[in-house]
Length: 470
Image 1 (cartoon, helix red, strand yellow):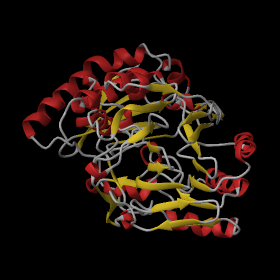
Image 2 (tube, helix red, strand yellow):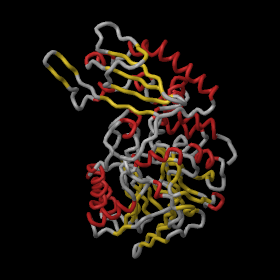
Image 3 (cartoon, one colour):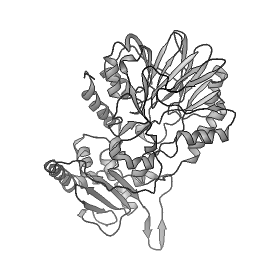
Image 4 (cartoon, helix red, strand yellow):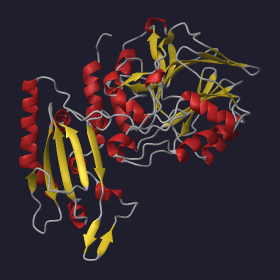
């Protein structure tokens, strides 16, 4: 028999007769650069968490790879023993952070390479979602756990195809208990002016995965977080479905598969003859408050304006001086050196940058349709087809290298859109649909979202939490 306890979000405590496994621990609020909190909120009695034989990390996203929790665990010899094995993907950045935190016994895993530990076999399953942007091109794994009698699969955030499903079936014939993806997160769509609706094609893949695997029981997995209260409006735009809606849809789509909600503190007992979920049965974690009603999808609801997060007026003035100096003395030089300059000129871009302070905003514009060298102009030019709006606090932090786009684009204080076209005499041209690079925003080009920015982001957390008492 395997017993699995949901601690919160994607963090599971999995127990066989001889082996204890902890996955993707995120134990503290706030999380993900302090933008989010666990939802539902939990009470976790850390001193009651049993020792672990295996710590499994699926991928580097901060709702799965939380530096604060890892810094806590590496100093807690009661939970993380000298014999604990840490399973991690082959991700140089993730591995360097583990090394920086002084983790030992780190084993790099590979797709479908099984690992035998005591009485269980652990098999990482691959993901096919490294597709869109450079910052998302890193390995990610689900996890199969088999004790010789039953098999559990935690899909985590991985996206799978028929070949992966077939390989899983070849290994074990069937899955007894499945933690399934259930909500396509669209948290970046608000800032980027992208569609605010349930992405049905992706959503259908989640239903089809369950149908193809036909597990004995399925529960919704991961995605148990929300934006913190002062960013509450973003919950309207980021979570287009719920656990309950997914289970309703699943019951109609493949009624032969048993399913259940699954909340922190719930314990699943998975045996060959029976699967039971005992609600709030854990000895060390329970739901504090079912605040899931705060995650609601209403993309037509009111949106607050962008505003500087700096409350102190003197500090705000200093930040505005940094911002104004950069825009008026450095921005144009950076733009003229950009590889995208030819594209902006070809598409006759009328670019507007709006910076929001404590009260109101200031606007700068560049007209790339001018035949001469582009110039920065204070105020608008009567046309916009590429826009960036950003708070002065976030732009100042980008200029000084103290933040990342991961935070800026998710905190609600950056918004962009484009309406790009080209007019010639008697002609009207649109960019090819598959050439989105023409619309790349100047700020994102000047402050590239690359591996260096990601590493600085994680290292800020390492310096903040390493060696601290909790």
